Image (tube, rainbow, N blue to C red; front, side, top):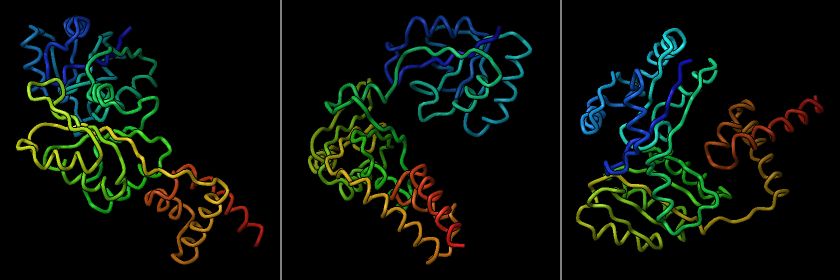
Length: 288
């Protein structure tokens, strides 16, 4: 029976490649790589000769169909890799894994490098529970909405990914929405020039502004939201109903439009807004 292996690769230090990962890539019939040129360097280093094809966000649908057909009909094993770290974590792959599972094909995961867990482990910030958001939107209005969601999330530890050109802008925006947050900003994890910036949002912003190579390398931001305020569930539920009613009648929205906008504005999760909308629907039907 065919199998799909999800294989982590190093995020910077080749010494983090596990023996099992090398053995798996060697023994598989096909490697699915986000960037074949990048992965070829890794394969050359470990003398891996397995056939490789591209699998990335621009050809994900087409490739998924091809790969599933091969797994179902040719009795082969395939390995999914990303440019760095664990596939499917803020990278392409989850759609393939889902479809493969739905076809009854076995999926096997390997442990290995992950920028997410590496940053959490060295952050000094509570990790009993955390919310991972990947890369936040670039557009200012969408970024503000996303940060409001983070602010209102009762899970106070948050993790973002960010590029070097936007790191200072992101920290400045975190300061606007969560001025009392504690941050650990990790740069170039596991690489020669690895560096961390830790402290209050003001301290970290000052450290980054004084760092000459701030616009080089990739960043992981681990933070703790000290600005979160517990809300009374009853009051919150009443205000959510009022907000939805307001959107329905003032803006002449449908219930679906009101729910979507409330979720985008960070007023409530989509699930909470949807539940409230069902209650509103019942009230409206009674009034008719």
